[in-house]
Image (cartoon, rainbow, N blue to C red; front, top):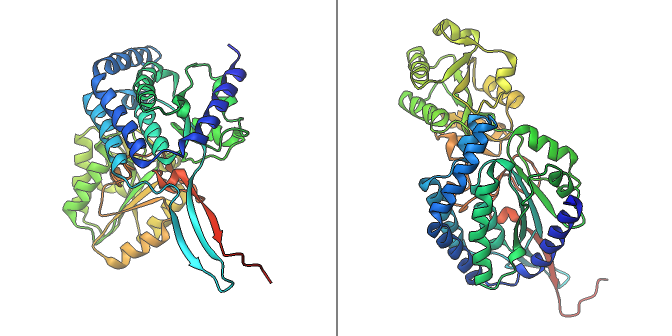
Length: 418
């Protein structure tokens, strides 16, 4: 197969499809999403069988447990996919709506219109749910999308694509609004990120090395987050019960996800007994503790943390814990070691909460809340196409609005500038 010709063909089809995708009404787009969900529910057994092939192959290749966790499709995750589509259906369609309408002294009326980005290239590892989330969000936002899932999820993605294509054809949409790159040849990624003539934005989802490589090599703008080194800071005024429950949920509810807490910062004046209880609970749940010297004074059995541990996104039952002198130290630590993804504070002090919220410049700030809520589905976006830690265009979970942009629309009754 000539990979360049194959990718160019897909890109040209995506451009033509994107020119048509913006003309459909909200109800027409919602009907497609409804049919995708129905198709997935009807095909659940075949989807799970395809996924079992991928899992078997992944284990044979000795892919990490975190990657396999993201790869697994079961009835619960399939139900979540379909629920995500149903939530997207309920979100009002803002495409081509006029906003910020203002008449100027000159007599012109200046407004803005929300428009699609155009063609989106999705590059992702494991996570077959991305196939459905990306398809649903791009259809609703009037974009076309080219999907390039990892080789480890190829059979699952192909099966899910049958459900998507069937729904597009039934509703007389161009089937190329959503396309899957079906070759597992790695050259396909290199070709895709060079197609700046056709693709408007690349969104990578996966490990840090994949995203770094794409961000460095892409000729197309990238919406990205490199890693999720998420922090929780327990303030001296924190409610002990909340500190325990939020910390445990943030770390142990699921390990192989980017919004799991990887570092815990604790004010030196917070209850030492409570610190011991939190450490003990984490250990009982099988979490390895890598802590600072001051934590080792409280519990001599923990592993002494190395410098690299403060930077780490473990994606595993491991957590780094540091006792800090005050709120300012916690903020400085997050600024140095954090990844601008999600960071939280547990506190009863309005002053401390306000300062943390203003000074920590992450895409999501959690106040007395688990970091595991940092998710488009939980934010009411229906689903997310990714999480952005960039500072331009979109930040945090990227939903429908993040896949659109604004253009100015200026009107008058023949006014001339003098």
